[in-house]
Image 1 (cartoon, rainbow, N blue to C red):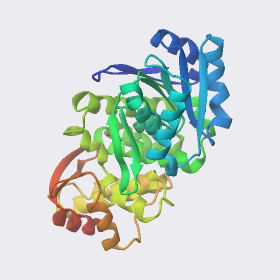
Image 2: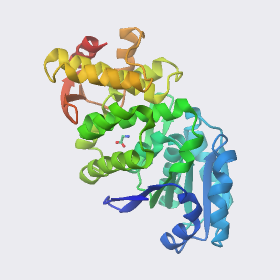
Image 3: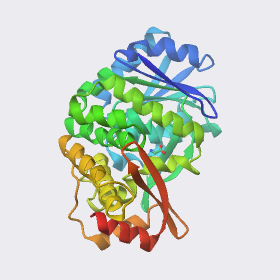
Length: 351
Ligand code: GLY
């Protein structure tokens, strides 16, 4: 097992390894001694596979839980479902000392986290990520949110979990497309911070050592969150590929996975960066090649104007500027503030 300690405003551990769900009961009992009951939020894709596996150890440790199941998919990450969870918790008379568990991918984690952040002005929650994307990114760092009709993650809060328990056995049941989607965030982490990880992924392809690579990615995310928990500076580096990626994802009507969209965004930015002389031409060559090795797309045929309309309405924009994440070399990137016109022109060069 790997443990990564996150020294956020409320510190916690991220534990990564096989079979960890079986120790969940004793773990949460020790961590949350005042909790009387646990609200276990999951979705109808994950629940049938993993709910019993997660809750049997709770019962075995003498703990009481109530499950709450959402329809799977990003379409469930809504304010309506947030209200349903809050009303359910209130109806079940959950108290401030009780704890929410998020058993699922990013949708379940973000939504449960926001419910925990707001229920009675904040209760504890624990992330049990079941997708690679949630394991390496969304379950760590305390960003919680729901989507609004105007865009993704527009309603949310920073609320750190008490524990992230990543049972790598769970990833074995992940559909291939979801696994590859998570790989895009891993490749992003390598491009941002870790040339050795990039080399390793380049050589191994999707057959990399799950536990070691997840732990490496969580370690990098921990470093960023420790320095910039509230996302006012360096944390924006994690948006590599996301500025255009979110636009591509929205344009596709979410028929592309998040990882596919981020891959297109990352490849585009790397090609544009090399054309501008911000990095060597080998950077986009290697990034395109590694993404293709993982079966991820590197180009879009979406119309430029449609993408720009979506990109410029993204919440990552601040006033008239966008901080575009641009590679200097593999393992090192910079934030380059651009006006919206400059950002559009920059992206056009990479598309
Ligand atoms: N997923 C980006 C962040 O946590 O800041």
